[in-house]
Length: 238
Image 1 (cartoon, rainbow, N blue to C red):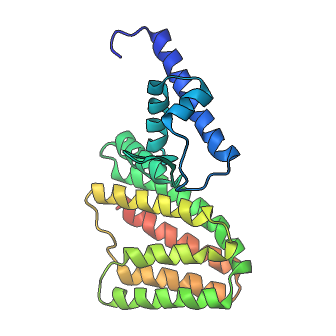
Image 2: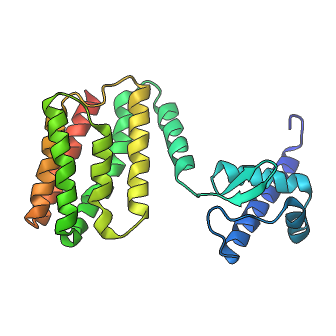
Image 3: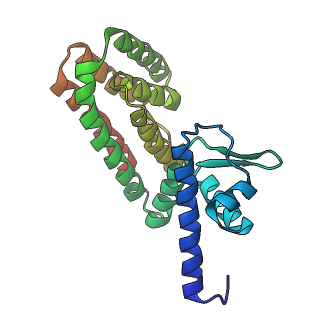
């Protein structure tokens, strides 16, 4: 609050953070899953030994992180703990830090995605099944149809990269990559840039990735992924 002593504000923030951690620990200790009902405000007040206002402030902060969901008139439930807060924060951070420097804003996001995907593609080459490759082939064929018509295909692009890492059995990987993909599109859109100036070329890059994976060519798959990202980077800088 304005005029409030700094030490008092710091103490209040520290208390709020402590209550947030205690609520998160309660969720973990009780093994509550997304959608599970949390204790009432009164029960949290008694259990944590804090005021109603402190409980409400902590729950509001946790709701912003998608850790809890407050349903007015029904109670507070365990949230999805999605990466939405990360996406929103990264989008704002990128746009705010770079101002009107489009290329710098997009380059940082691409660099992170490139490092992640170039490393992961080597593992995919060793684990991807023929069935998964068939599904990737279907997506690429649809890309090629769109590319010949000159139509961008952002949804197919996203689907391809989500399917690509299914064989790793790591649920966080597609979520994290999708988060950076969403941030890139948001920043790109905020700058008024075209989604894809050359859809046919983008389709070919994805075709090359699948071809290398079919051949179990680890180095070739990584090279194809590098070419893909370098192509995107050149467009972003243009």
